[in-house]
Image (cartoon, rainbow, N blue to C red; front, side, top):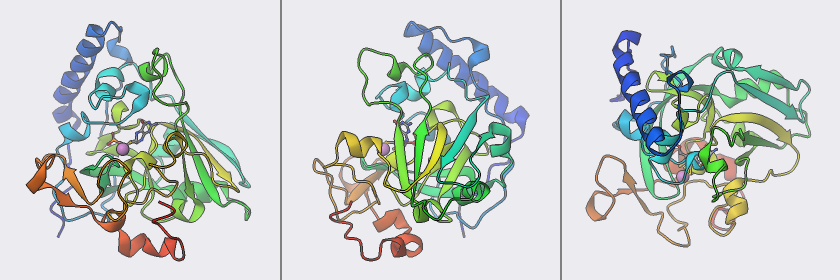
Length: 313
Ligand SMILES: Nc1nc2c(c(=O)[nH]1)N[C@H]1C(S)=C(S)[C@@H](COP(=O)(O)O)O[C@H]1N2
Ligand SMILES: [Mo]
């Protein structure tokens, strides 16, 4: 049986935590010379979500780690930067444009996105940097959104783009720009339609914090974390493989598929083991073995029949 049970947190219980997070964001931003008004800081609200069978039997990573140890280069390249620098980011109002090879292109407003039947999914998350977490996401299958726009027979891939807002994202406005913007990602259409693939709008029973990709981000649990593009504003159906940010930046290190694969090392480090955050596995003994497809091989290995995943990593 799953060890994790969905937190049922009353709004009154979570308020003090919000005050703490907001104050910390304000103080860090103020120290860095930015002004962040209290009103601009997003308040997480509790989200109702149905139980789902997708719950792994491993302890969840503490919420404070999930929300303070992040990769989100639009807010800086340090692990603490996204939490510290995203206080001024406005995740509402929001709209996601869905276009390209579909019969019914349209925009989905935030209320409509939150109106899809939400489920809680507790998934492993494995970063290509060899650390991992177990996260209780709230979201809905990407397939449900794709059904609404009716992909054409010619559509073979799905392309995603993150918002570009230098005025709210310090990593997009500084002298040093770590990546070309927008951050882009892509999936094959059958990967996008796989039941494990979700658009997430929350974690730990609440809406997503800015640092985790508010208000909506992709979660593909059998792939390295960089495929999980944050703060999505556009989803396009295409005939050819779309450009992907890390694949473009370093094609020898980050492939299009990016399936978690302990047998294919990163050119600069091993992918055979990982540091599960909270288990002290940075060095040696406490490291966990990394599982093929991050432990989801039974569900997804069939998607790659006939593809050499050592050559097409
Ligand atoms: N737009 C955008 N999405 C992004 C990133 C980013 O820098 N920008 N980082 C990726 C990487 S490398 C990882 S490991 C995950 C981290 O998600 P988390 O911070 O919610 O754990 O987000 C991914 N999505
Ligand atoms: Mo990552």
